[in-house]
Image 1 (cartoon, one colour):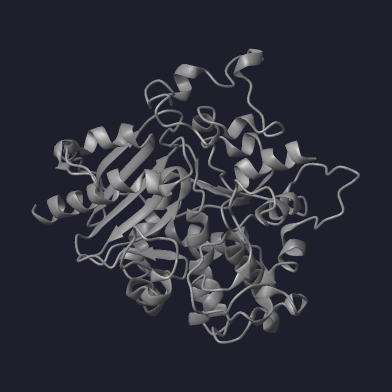
Image 2 (cartoon, one colour):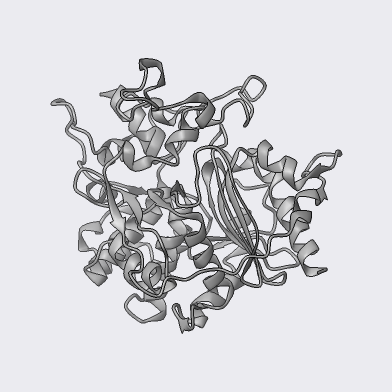
Length: 433
């Protein structure tokens, strides 16, 4: 049983693979096309990767799997638009590759182009004033392909939750149990909608993957879509598990980035709207944007979408979402999301609660509606996911960056030093034009 649960967790919670960065293959050496994963009819035995044994999400195989998630796991669609597909204007700027910056904590300058390989970038797109000025694809990602968004998925769920608050379908001061009576007595029962959206809940829940007793293992077991052993007697889907999470500490005091907050918000949203997260995301955002490609969510054995990290999408479609947020919810000649919701996101969250968290390197940041806010001089904020996924929005520079990546380690702390300063330098460059 443990082997199956570990393999599932590698996907759904992106366990850090404990790779020694001194010995890991470079981006060029680990290119999934060169390594020929899953190529052939059938592929050679040493080129087959699988969700059953967890091999599909171990580096370097993960560089292939992030672009082919539904090849390994059950999924459900986020339907794209049928008509009025949106198309960006493109004016590529080759000078962006030559922009240089100093990585955080470093002394030697690096060019933008060099940083892409350093961060195992699979795709990167930059919008300036709504126009594509930079777009490149690497590895297994193609312009018409989809890529795992990891915890960027949380931002879509949080944005939908914030939308329902703005529309009055959710009261941010009411509790989880007010909407899901089954949560009475559990940690989320007396947590407010606002505390859940901003992840300031006090939970007895650990995502320390090195601890075999961490609650994350039970969460993984519940969401495992594959047949469970006869000896298994725990929760059998995400919702059943969420009822077991216990409270620890006081809600509202400290920011704690924990995936279960997003999944309980997904449950609340679905209970209130009577629609799944994939259905609601399609109806309220994906179709109105004019998205070209159906996205998809991974689902558990009960067909419940993994709201906290299971979304895969096309890069240009993700850029449409980012540009819509940058433009105060207005996109493709229509107001898709309320301006008041976007302003709430742009204002950021509780900086004091964030400062008490474990994110010491993100001094001055905050978290609101499942968006990360830098509070830098440009007011930049972002959706972020492990292995390098991001939608980074710089309002002052009128810039949106979408990046998909497959970095060997599931730690943004390994990636931020050569990405955050790079984004800021590109923003300054674009403002000078």
